[in-house]
Image (cartoon, rainbow, N blue to C red; front, side):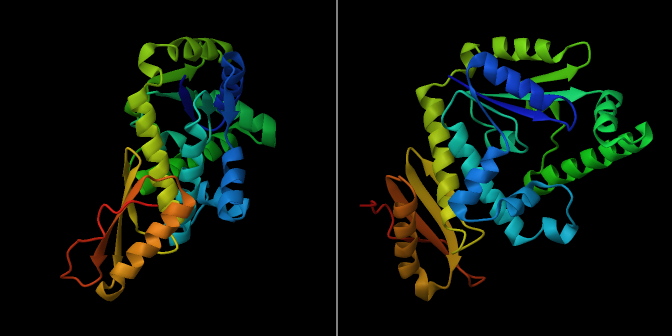
Length: 280
């Protein structure tokens, strides 16, 4: 069992490759459906979540706390979907969330600008120059988006296990190459990699559930045990710690939770509150 993420430049036929690949392997193919799931789970309009992933944003919008919040919701939903295995995901940003998971096969699809421009011209009825200008701006905006939120460039080949250039290699060729490569033992799910994925998924779910308390909350999960780090005035720390534990217990399947509160005073230090107390 494996997970495949396909990162693609716009109009590079990545969607077609993902759909044919999923059909070939008998995997589930997901993309935009993630936004619908996140919208339902977190009661956020799908359009707002889509704009959080959109590169057509002003600088003020990109730094807004709401945008960070929406991306946290999307991350939780993406990881929940990928944790099922046997999935091909071709939505934007998915590979960011699972970059360190061994059984996730990360693929990048690229194509020549002229070939991409032909697709834009056919869709929008514009000139080649206009199509190339549109693609240049779109690529620049996506690069800025990924660098702003994650400090990486999506075109960096070191982020991927495989980069395929659609030119001499056709869509069907790409499907054949990926389907053969993903069968390698190194991309199969193991107990250790599954536990790593479970912890990543759990941490994202916990963080999403706590954003109303602290938008900068930090969450780490290890073997089902969760550590939450947050800032608060000293006089509310104990009550806040229990409140956080109650929320985590209701929202997730965490085995244990540890809450560390950081006083809002500039001279404060991390204080462990009710450490190692089990959820029950």
